[in-house]
Length: 272
Image 1 (tube, one colour):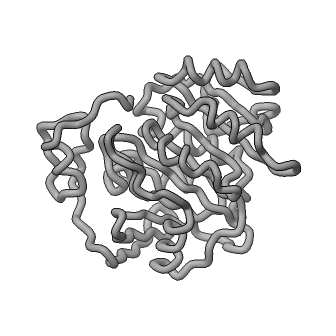
Image 2 (spheres, rainbow, N blue to C red):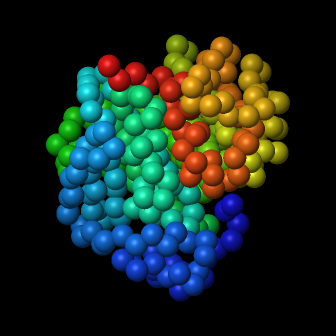
C-alpha cells in the first residue's frame, strides 16, 4: 500500500550497503553504493545491463540481445514504496521479467519515491533519457514508450502524463489516486494514436472497477492469464483493460507472472 510513511531511521538506510533489518517492510537486500558518474556494465539475463550513478539516484538499464534501436521502444518501470532501484532489480528479478516479455525495448528503471512524503525523483522523461543515452552511448528509442508503475510508482507516472510520447501506462496495483487524471489522459488521445491504460488490481480494485465502469469499451477479466497464451481478443486491444489480480499486492511484481503478460500485449515490437 501507500498509506504508511516510514520511520526516519528507515529512511536513512535506503541505498546503504547494509539495510536496516529492524524496519520492515523495507527491502533488506544489501547492495553496493554507486557514486555519481559511475557506470557498471554487465552481461546478464540474456542481455546487457547498466547500473548508472546519477545525482537523482541509481538508474538501471537492460537491453535484450538482438535489440534493434531503429524499431525499438522503451519501457520505464517505476518501483513502489519501501524499496530502491537496486533492491527491486534483485528482489523482483526485473531483468528476467523483461526478457520473458520477448519485446524489443530499452528497459529503464529509475529511482522512484519510497514513501508518501518523498517527492517524485524524475520530474520528466527527457532528463532521464539523456542520462541513459550519455551513460550507455545508445541512441534514444524511437518506438512507443510504455510506463509500468507498481504501487506508489503511480505518483511519478501521473506527473508524466503530459508527455505525448507515452502510449501505454500499466498500473500494477497503483490506482490509489488520480483516477480522473488517468481517465482524462486516456480520453484526450490525439486522433490516430493508440493510448492504452491497463489496470492490474488487488488493493486498488474499487477504484479500478469504478474507472472501468465509466469508460466506454473497457474490458475486464476475472484474473491475469498465464504468460502463454497471454492476452487475446478484445483484452489485447482495449483502450482500458482491467485485470482482477489473483496475486496479492507484492506478488504482482515478485511472482514474475504479470509484467511479461502485459508487455507481450503492448505496442512494442517483438524481438526477432
